[in-house]
Length: 101
Image (cartoon, rainbow, N blue to C red):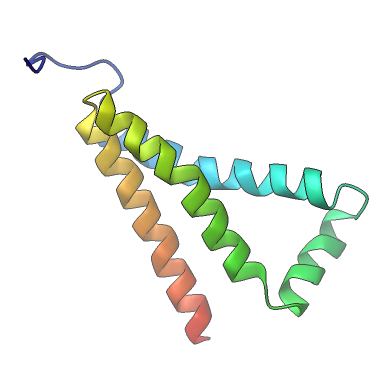
């Protein structure tokens, strides 16, 4: 039987904030693990010149938001899951715009 009361931590705003910040955290972890000896400005220069910035952002978004989305779904926090999906669409729109430029 599904719990019909208000679930704790279930809001679109919370899901959106988590969905925006989680890929950024994964990006920082990626930098610290893979390129920890490189200066951050040199790292961004490397990503943009190698034309891999957009794929890295896409991968960070996918790897971060997918498990969070399903965790919210499995714990019946549908509004928070909707917020994570909204943040993922924001990242997708950004990626599409950057690919067109």
